[in-house]
Length: 160
Image 1 (tube, rainbow, N blue to C red):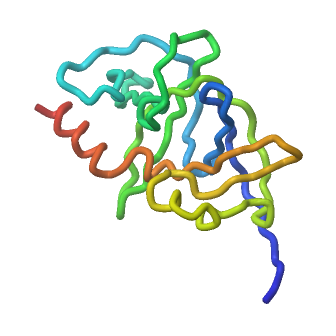
Image 2 (image 1 turned 30 degrees about the horizontal axis):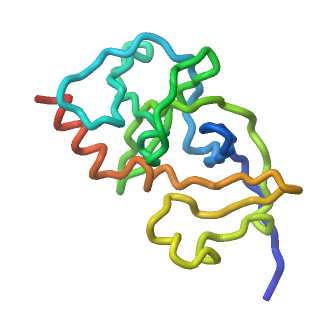
């Protein structure tokens, strides 16, 4: 068995006091919160749609999607433009977070896998945890947070 390490880039962000990270490869860009057009009869976690340089994208509330309470919007809120990988194609969505932090390199040996957390591996979109001297960062699987089924429902609503 080898102890080979690989390092990958992750974007860190905050939801309340909790720190999360997602692979940089899933993030198209980060934009400031702007005008949101409300869409009737959509799931509560869908805040509406945004116009990103002529492309219409659904805007999803990451807090609500994770079962966290909603909060007031602030100037620190950011929209992560994410590429959610479905089978052969990627779908773009905007996901609002409280604060976008920084891009960090995380060594694979630092990540404690979710399998180590007995009952949580099937119910949580967290694939691992990094404990950097007490600074806990949860690695998020965005494809589980914003599932293909959710995106299909949203797409059907928008195309009615």
